[in-house]
Image (tube, rainbow, N blue to C red; front, side, top):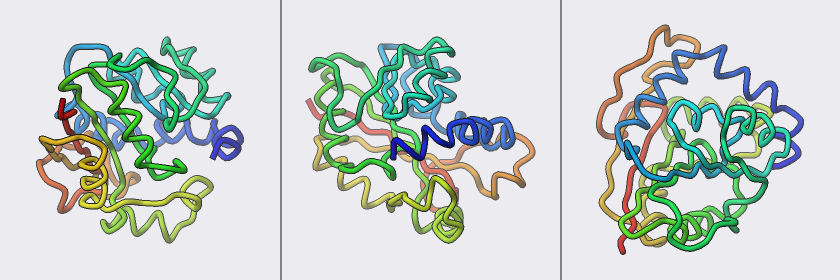
Length: 207
């Protein structure tokens, strides 16, 4: 996916300005499960939009162009892949993976390496577009520059992968109850994953 994001990094970054209320809705849902303190990492940091809003200081991404922008936003961003994180064991208090797992080659390996770099009882926070909700079905049909190469997950399917990778104590929040173009102000997130287009999963490293 490196070439796609390097080629269209400006289009990617502009989405957050064009659909700012949808972006802020996602931020509010993520905050429901994201730790308020500690050393954090965003895997698939992109241009640093989420990390900069959420106070996440470290990031990694496979796109050289995006890493450069993330660094301009004061993120300690590194070039690399989620399957082989360039960090020592037990380094971070939490890690966020937002709209990224659907693009990686080996999602389970990404989750397992995330578990490795988290401290004892560290938190993982994942944001996804569920493949079976209205927004997931729309993006799969639309075949945009980005999502035409994506592998979407069901929330239950991803929960099972997290269990295999060594996580438990799950919590779920949802937002984007309309299409991004129709959201005029930040929505209040709700518990669960039955209606919203954007789902946030929080879980804890078992040991």
